Each structure stands twice: as structure tokens, then as C-alpha cells.
Amino acid sequence: MNFKDYYSILGLESNKATANEIKIAYREQAKKYHPDINGGNTDLEEKFKDINEAYKILSDSKARKKYDRSWYIYTERKKRVQSKKVEEKKTFKEKLLTILFGITSNKVTKKQERKITVDGENIETEVNVNIVEAFNGVNKKLKLLAVDGKTRTFNLNIPAGIQNGDRIRFVGQGKPGKNGGKNGDLLVKIDIKNTKDFKLKGADIYKEINIFPWEAALGNKITVNSLDGEIALVIPKGTQSGEKFTVKGKGYKIGRGQRGNLYIITKIIVPKELTEEEKELYLKLKNLKKEKVKIGS
Image (cartoon, rainbow, N blue to C red; front, side, top):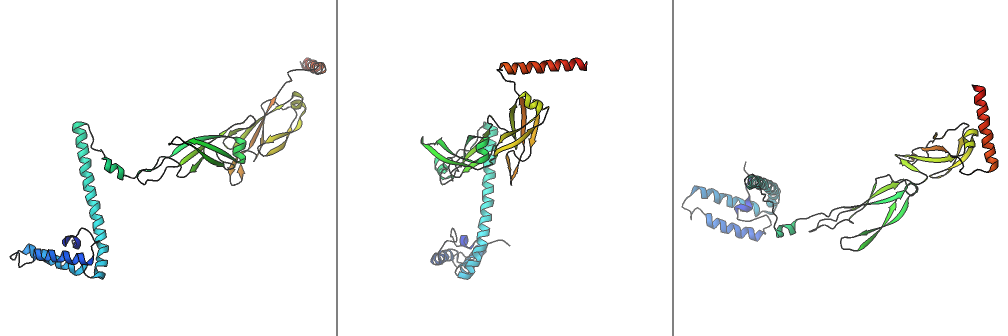
């Protein structure tokens, strides 16, 4: 069954017409297509029947309200079909122009351009923080040069345990939109930098400590700085340079209270300057080692 657009039958453009406008439109159409005027033309008689049917429905407020629901569905479907046909025709035309002349017909007039809603672009920047700042959280002042040439200052609240590469978003602080489009956002990427004492690898922290030869040979108990305070570390006898000690759960924050590990790497250092007494001790140690080698051989 074909849907009948009663508003179109009465010569009305939409369903926004008032009851009085519907009445006037009906009289004009009825007079124009009345059988007595058109000499018994059967096609026009059917048109006259549609006009009467349309007025009967649209002049009744309840019947009109019910009909409008179907009308909306019909008109929206009709718009989609027409839009698709126009788009297909446009696409065919563009393809033909491209094939024949190597040009496209996608030019937009200034009037059309003013009506197009365009969202603003996002602005991205980067801020460096060291491991300690990132671990504990820090506030920084971020100054950026805006499009209008003025300097804008943002209060950047970096939360404790932020991950390397995370972005902090300032909604609506990017480039402005056009013709009612929303503004873009400002995205601040966090780049965590290593310090002299700590190096970040994933969620693990690496720290190098210097120990003296006698500490490596005899062993010792020392204190080592971590990201959240001092920890005790036992250096066992015979420790070599480059040995790695693992302190579980003392690395960087992962989330939900979890943390990576802290890896402490030893580096045996030799004093650059020695007293006469220290020289004698080293010479004595050297001679003892020589004697030990002779005995062993």
C-alpha cells in the first residue's frame, strides 16, 4: 500500500500548517479539481477523492496527530532516498570529471562554508618531569603561546605514580571551533626523565652504588636511598663489581598499590689518592696475594 502525503496533496509544504491554512488549501484544491469543472476526467476524479480524504484526516486533530507519526517516518525515508540519489549522482559526476579532465567538483562556496560546523583541532605538547617528581606527584606551571599571540598559563597537576607517556587533558583549551563547532582539547604528554640516582625501566628502578674494595671483600651493612626513604642493604663478603641486588616492591608504582622492583648494582671504586699508611696496607695485601699464589702453585 502506497503512503499518501496528505499535506502534499493539499499543496502544503509540511505539517506545520495551521487548521485555518489547511482549510484554505483544501478549498483551493477542491475548486481546482472538482469533477463538474473538469468534464468527468477520471484521473482528476481520483485526485478530488484524495483531496477530500486528506482534508477529512487533517481537519480532525486526533486523526491528524496519529497520521503525523506515519508522515514523519515517510518523509524521513524519502529524504534519505533523495539524498542517496543526489550523492550517487554527485559521485558519478566527480568520477567522470576526474577520468576525463583530471579535476574534481568538490569546491565549496563561501556561503556553504560558513554553514559547515567544524570542531577545533587538539593541541599537543610535552612536559618533562624526573622520576622522583612523577613518583610523588607535583604541580607545575605550563606556559603556552596561544593562537592570538598571548601567553596562557595552565596549572598542571601531575598525580603521583603517573606513567611515562600518559597525557593530561584540558577540555576545550585547544584550537577554537568554527560555526558553532566545539573547541579542541589541550593534551599534555608526560615524559619521565632519569635522575643521577635512579633509572626507570618499565616499572623497575635501577640504582648504582659505589662500594670500597674492603667493603666488597669483607662485607658490610649500608643504607641506600630509594624513592620513598632509606633501606638497609647487606653487602656480603666477596661481592664483585656489577653484582645486582633485588629489593622487591620498591620500584615504581604500577597501580592498585602495586610496585615494581628496585635493582641495586654495585660498583667497586678505588681511592684516587692514598695516604702513606694506606699505600703500605695495599702493598702488604699485594705481597700476601703473591705469597698465596706461590704456595698454591
